[in-house]
Length: 496
Image (cartoon, rainbow, N blue to C red; front, side, top):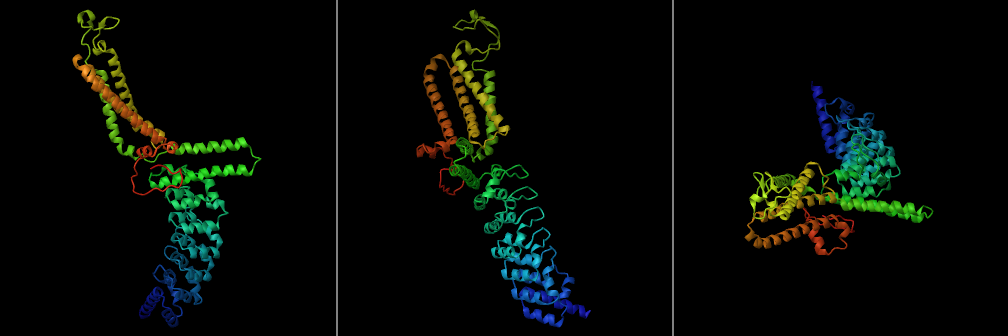
């Protein structure tokens, strides 16, 4: 019993010495019991003293521990409860000298995987330990090609943990391996460019699109959701970073066009008509898509409930106005001879029950009333239909059409009201009211025209901004929701 207590005490002292890096304590413990290191494997601790000293970067203690024969070098092969070796922990902490000592003790540990399939290089990449990455690659160049359990590469880990410098170093080591650069993970089928776009890492995207091997696959390699790396941006929540990514993508595509034109210049034997046709169509297609797109669609989503209510109210009012017109309807069949006072009941010379009364006195004005009412009714139904049908309002043209339908519904509801009021006024009042009516009519229509004009200019902002006066551009530009200045170096930057 006393002997067991002494062994436990020596083991506690050994672990304490490993945490403090005390070589003298280690030597004294080995001197008292030369088999101390052999007894480590039966202790209840998950880590060995070498795990602890390697993790804390105690170089001298680590070297001294590894120097004891025969058990010392074998400690480099011991794994903790998560199947991590001392080299895993040293690589994560970034102690280059300690990593070098462990590699010299057992070079094969560079390929040992933990329970998640990570090797020491993966730990170094996650923490951005550049010197350790260089050391591990120099020791075992093939370790860079080792994947995790779900197929992710070390490049995927660099993007996931936003380690751009580590990514640049690793890409430089495998730049000629196109298949590895564009490799997908098993779970989602994402390349590193897919992942960078999804995580909206602007600087990482800029670096990746500068690599020809990556840009060639950006528009062709699909993940398991069926999206390309550049196509993923259309399915992410829209914010300031989305605008920056769209600008990067647009610049890359325009650069492809310039490269095509340069290739034609360098290769005069190519068909002039074919090269011109491809480059021209590609250029104008890109311009067309980018001019149609908009990024401020939240106002429709935020107000969709209120717009549905307003459109429903307008549709109800205009429907009732058509069935119950101003002046009412005839209650029974009536002849013209019975009425007098200038009533004309049509070819059959009778006013049938259920038909409107006022068309017999003011046929032109009543037709205008019905035209306004019908237009407002159909426009409001159009708004309701667009809201419930999932109309793609992310495009400028679709958003403009939605705004047009709303404006028409409200405008013609107002015109229906004014025309209805005019129809039921007494004759001696109509002359004075007509002056007011005419002013309101032209005033409201002018406001309607201005609003639609501004929405039209906003839709065509990119094509016309070089020709519009500055005050008009300021009016049509929607204020930014965030107080971050957008600095653009070219006209390809999108409006806020």
